[in-house]
Amino acid sequence: MGFGLIYKRLIFCVAFAGILLFHGFCSSDHQGTYKGPKYTFMHQATSAPAISYYDYIIIGGGTAGCPLAATLSHNATVLLLERGGSPYGNPNITDLSAFGRALSDLSPSSPSQRFISEDGVISARARVLGGGSCLNAGFYSRAATKYVDGAGWEGRLVNESYRWVEKVVAFEPPMKQWQSAVKNGLLESGVNPYNGFTYDHMPGTKLGGTIFDPEGRRHTAADLLKYANPKGLTLLLNASVHKILFRIKGKKRPLAHGVVFRDGSGNKHRAYLKRGSKNEIIVSAGALGSPQLLMLSGVGPSDHLKAHKIGVVLDQPLVGQGMSDNPMNAIFIPSPNPVEISLIQVVGITHFGSYIEAASGESFTDNPTQKDFGMFSPKIGQLSKVPPKQRTPEALTQAIESMKALDPAVFRGGFILEKVMGPISTGHLELKTKNPNDNPSVTFNYFKEPQDLQRCVQGLKVIETVIESKAFSKFRYDYLSLPTLLNMTANAPVNLLPKHANVSTSLEQFCKDTVMTIWHYHGGCQVGKVVDSDYRVLGVDALRVIDGSTFNYSPGTNPQATVMMYMGVKILKERLESSKSN
Image (cartoon, rainbow, N blue to C red):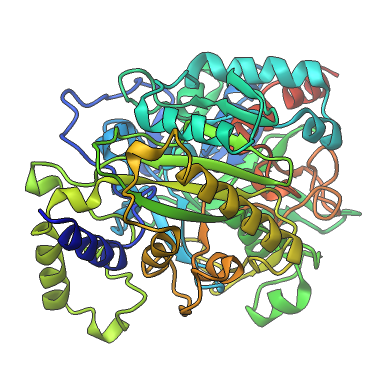
């Protein structure tokens, strides 16, 4: 095939299918689907009694809730309520080669729930045991020492907790040609020194960890439940919590004492705390779910709650405030040579506050039934350039067939991306409905603060240098100039924002036009604003929030390691076990 035709099809492909960065790496089915552990304490919520009693009720069996439940179950009775199903036995979650399929699944039972921020950026929230660790690109990296110190955590306990997690879910990834070229390109570009393989957050270039084992099988926070005491834990799947119950009469402060949840058949159940001054309800429903549930339960801005006809338990105007999402921008580089399927492995930690990472791999397979074009594919109809009324079944079928006819060579290549540290820009979250299964309205205000935009521009300049480096030369066409690559990427429907013609001459405009999520959103229940330093909700008793909604800034290059670690694995274990024994 001539290069001119390849180039034309590349532009068509990227513009039509959208960025495939984290959404379309597929190959042949993994033989022998991993069924996972047989937890004796895991049940469908339909089997739950109408009323039950526990020492601790944890809402959300995600990246935070699973390790927390495992820890507390050794000295207390714990109820863990997860609104989704089990990740085990689902190859779309388990297999690295299937990465992206779960995000493309829009069915009601999907482990991924699509939402679009008010900024126009398409994203997803987890709806599965194990949470975001079942959907992400698998990168595992600890928080910086400075972050740990700023959070007021004890360094020794933090390191012990990280190791506790790493025994189960963290691995050293294989270093193949594409990732090696990115690594060497970063070093050529001055992102030094090379720190080798390490879980630690260190300035320079490093090979980080992954939650995919050497066989390409994902390990998640749900695997940490192997640490649980089976006699102390009850885990209910497809249990959607609708409300936290408070005792107010005769109390100086509202006292959380129970929850109302519905099972997969819609039946209502109630779970209450046993008598005991130290017993608690812990909300670990994620950066969207936790502030949403507090509001639905009457804890939030009073005017907003009243507008939704929700009884006000506590006027707390800061619930839902401080929402942030690390803006991510990527450049797609078509390759004249085959590249391996790889997710995030190498990271360049710059001195100016941008993280440079990469992913690669063909999105097609020889099996036509397994072809998947990613989160923004015509299969989904989320094409920003196609008005909703024109997304007819016939139009989508035609689009899919057109893409299937393309030569796989036009999809060969990968992405180099940059993610802004922090970020500084913040937004807010509000309720849309009183249904906890509906997405709330969330605004992240990407690049509202000039410093975030400047970090993006600096990160893109490093990416450009990597692309032009000697180390990366075998993975790029000489004919494709940097402006061409920028324009080609910008033509993709990566979000629902209007496009501009000057992205190749204005990196600032490229940042704004092509901003995407890397699913590291946080805030809404921040420390010092909604919860105290021990994550107790301010103004009420027997209620904590323990998850990424408490973060002021996202830790490290990827937050999942820190979420699994700090969410009570050792730190809260000592605090809560000590309080239980007193």
